[in-house]
Image (cartoon, rainbow, N blue to C red; front, side):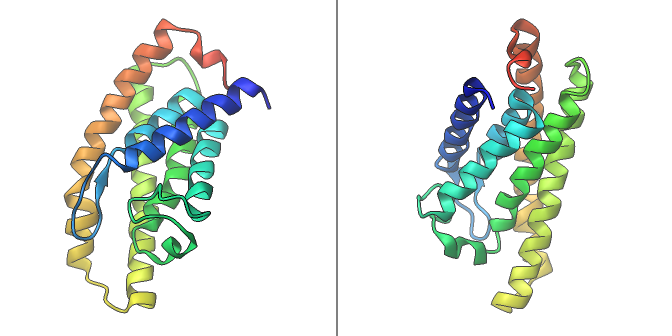
Length: 181
């Protein structure tokens, strides 16, 4: 592992954590800027180091640092929205995989960002349903769909589009894409 790659992964770990604190509180699932920074980590760092930055973020939160929207500590695993945080690993990895397959065209960037976002939502919603039904015992499909999908998804989709345009512009204007392979 190159030192530069680890430093960049650490930078994106910090950005993802900072994105937690820029949020719109909602009753069930708060809206944050985390998906934007997770998407950018996949674009700029690639599938491996993008995922490493998210895994480090999750490890910091599980160790007790309050970097999650619901706080920090190992007990956060039992929060129904923790599945979205797990989904961030797939989001960064898939985004990096698709974006780094060829030249950084806007189509490839958008495909990578939206593929990662859809996987993140799939993992998050399945986890939400599982924890709500089997652990908390109060699963409501209507609440899940409205609070965890219909309200935050348009914002996250707009952030993915912004990340794709930003990533394409940055990757075309620099040699950043050669740093992390």
